[in-house]
Image 1 (cartoon, helix red, strand yellow):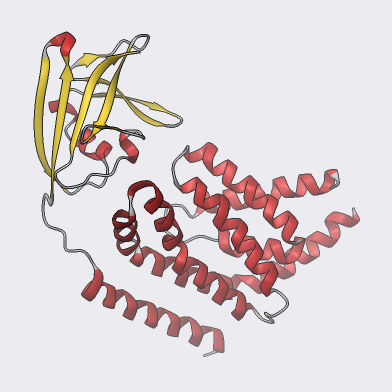
Image 2 (image 1 turned 90 degrees about the vertical axis):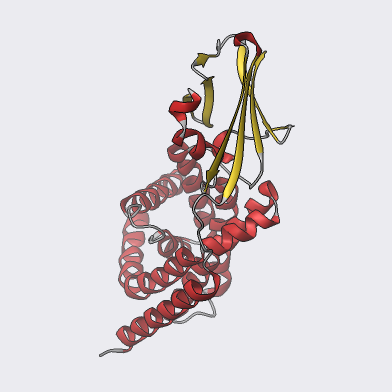
Length: 131
Length: 167
């Protein structure tokens, strides 16, 4: 067996040991539905003010919304910069004058739902607003 | 810079993008690190740096904007600079394999730093810890790929470089 083969085998063995160490000591234990998340939808035009609570392991808001797309009546639109919410509770925002404003714990969201991380006990509010 | 150099940078950028897409079905196994190291050694750090800019910009066109592209604009030029600084000290492919391995093992850590700026330190730390298995795979696969492919690819590119500039 030449030197390179021996080196490769040695590196693979060390990697496997490190992986085993990670699984034993560092790997996060996944608990089903670890985070409790609240989705609050406000649409004064349609007299909608509804709150939904979910237990989830998803990392980002978009994943949770996609999973519950039917219940929340959401429509998305894919843009180059990411995904935008164009409709909620089966109401389609008029793209010329309306949009769904997103709040995270009552503060304006700085990014789209694809980049908003889900944290336990967070409240994500979507409110129909005019431009 | 001559027109021939500009064309070469475009071609090298395209090869890296193609190589990445070809292996994209295997998580964190790539030949991009190997190619950046070899391109820097063969064509110099200036071209290597410009190729990294072409590569990252092309990636944005393919995958869209997100926080990762900020890291890409730093991490690939950084690999080019490290390779340039190490090339006089490294005598065999083993040295470059170690450079590639360290680069792969710390790849997620650099992303975690950027994620921390956007989402907080706790999220950055969780991001890094959850990605450790993928970083292990990345570093080890880099080591093996560079150890096996560095010499033949370097020899081939050196010959092609002579022919390209002589023609």
